Amino acid sequence: MDFINQIEELKQKNKDLQMKSVIINEIPYDVIGFESLVDFSATWEMVETLVRHEEEKSSESIGLHFPNTSWKKIDFNKQIKTLYEGKVIIWNRAEEVSLIIDPVSQPLYRSIEVPVNESIIYGAKDAFTENSQQNIGLLRSKYQSKDIEVITTQHGKRNRRFSFLILKGTTEEHMVEMIKKRIEDYSNEIKQVKDIHVAFGFSKFSLITRVNSTELPENAMEYIEQGKIVFFMDGYPFALVLFNTVFDVFKQPSDSNYLSAFVYSLYLLRIVGIMIAVLLPGLYVALITINPEMLKVQLALSITESRQFVPYPAFIEIIIMLLLIELITEAAVRLPLSISNTIGVVGGIILGQAIVEASLVSGVLIIIIAATTIANGIVVNFENGITLRLMKYIIVVFSALFGILGHVIGLLVLCSYIARISSFGVPYVRWKKEGVQSENQ
Image (cartoon, rainbow, N blue to C red):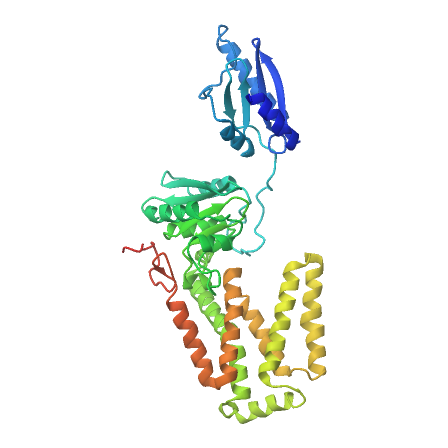
């Protein structure tokens, strides 16, 4: 079956595949591409411009020729693959050779906008998009040097592209190659970030995310300069960063825009917020259930008075409230913005007041839950916030079983778990600020 017949057969299954015939210098050509990926009107103008240039360049030239390109006999499957990548094939019927060109693409991606998920007060207001080439361009505009290099690979039936950025003298290039090989050797389709964790050999049930993310080009550039590995996955509007460390929970690159005194005050505030988010609910359960003697008499009496009509123990009380807050948080995230604000008001004020007046929980617990929820939002990155939300349940369970001793045991269990985590030999708790040490170092 010749090439044109195969294309005609493919058109029967893909109605957006277009083939336009043209005769140039008495030689028939076919211009083939997907109209869903290619702007044919603009591309056709580009082809005509190149043709006129060729005709003016040499009156003796026969046929269609493009500078810096070559006509080749290419396997049909490879040509089809280029069509799905958004390229255009110009087919020479007489010589049965093809020329593949980069056309004017359809505007399939949104333009560069302000960040949505990461609030920035003092810094650049641009954010990454779903187009990895556009994202790489953003980083090149911020680091205009030959030291920045890009290597790419493609994976799976989706032909999804992964682009890795390397800063010479800082990035461990052999580590980038190792990570690139892990992606290429992964047998399943990589659809989500969770699949990247599995491809790298990390447990998908881990409490700690090993791959950080940011939608801010300035932050991504700072991560590269720190020796971390930054890469993009087509269709994902974030830069993915290896390796995530404990400092990334309370420290972000854009903090360097502030004066040192302000920066260290922010670090201290975030650390206090992390401690409140993880330890405060468990401390409430331990002191109310097992160790009330550790409270001052006035405080103990005040808490007892607020709980005198609550019909169940402190552990059940706090679990109900924590789950209720989780439901409100998820509802606020999933619902449209016009409704999510209403959900926050209803859940935070009306429902909170009603549940206290009905004596289902104590007023003190409402304060504890409010402080925990606010403190949980002070950490850097949404993934780290989810980690803290899960960790506090472990502390609450240990505190309900063993009181203050269980509270300390739960904290030690979490600390030992965090201390043993590493990614490709790079420990999660790492004190070195710059450069990434490989497994052999």
